[in-house]
Length: 338
Ligand code: WQD
Image (cartoon, rainbow, N blue to C red; front, side, top):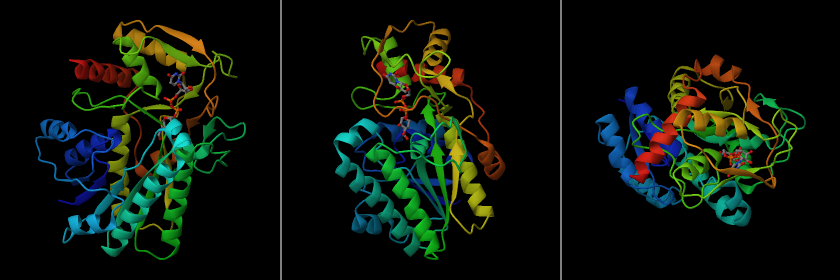
């Protein structure tokens, strides 16, 4: 079995990817210091997969600790998720974001090159597109607009680092997967998104409002140039994102690349804030108290993926609907409140 090192593997997208890697016959090894995730996730992963998942609990920025912990291990591939990802927090704590998100990538890339790892997948984000001028559906070649948050900048810089490492002749096959808006949870209800404190993202805020943790949802802005005046995003089930990583590994194992490949991971469908609220209420049968509020700084009116490249290169397309994701997110919310 191929050992795949999954940094941040106890996190939201990381943990769902670990499940799918095991399903497809890989041997994932989690490298996570649980600063942004819970150790209970490991037990749930073993319940879901029936497999013991090895965990290396070290700081992925610590070159010495990483080298010591991985000494002598045969690692065929690396998926690097470990990073801070709260846009708002990155604006108030830019240095924490630059240090952690850049240093972790440099450390694990350096280790990978020294240890002759072949396949490397970087967790990137649609945030790198910023506010593309007058473009709603983005392809990988879309000229990015202004990227306002330090979080987004760390992903722009991260992609540049991969490009420069490739140009240096390092024998690494590399993919950067640009996720759109991850939502939902594993259908078992045993793992899902665990926002720390008040959720920044829309769907966790909806489900927390529906269970009464949050008193009311504020819809940020009602007069955007969209059909119902609220922002449109490409919400994609986290299980589909997890599958994209397994397909990405297979692609790298079978395709020697001259350059880094950058691939959008989205559904290709836009959904407005009000549409997502309505979908939640229809699926859950639970009303969500909400009101309109001020626009949130940095929000773009409408952005969604053109998924053609992911279909062509990864032989991957989404299998889950928005309804599936909302249903799975609601089941997860109810489970963690029990
Ligand atoms: C979606 C829409 C809000 C909360 C972010 C990151 C991106 C990626 C996904 C990591 C927007 C509106 C939200 C609320 C609201 N993460 N909203 N009330 O901002 O598109 O993307 O998460 O890679 O990098 O930027 O997602 O869920 O925060 O917002 O009206 O209480 O919901 O204004 O229009 P976003 P989001």
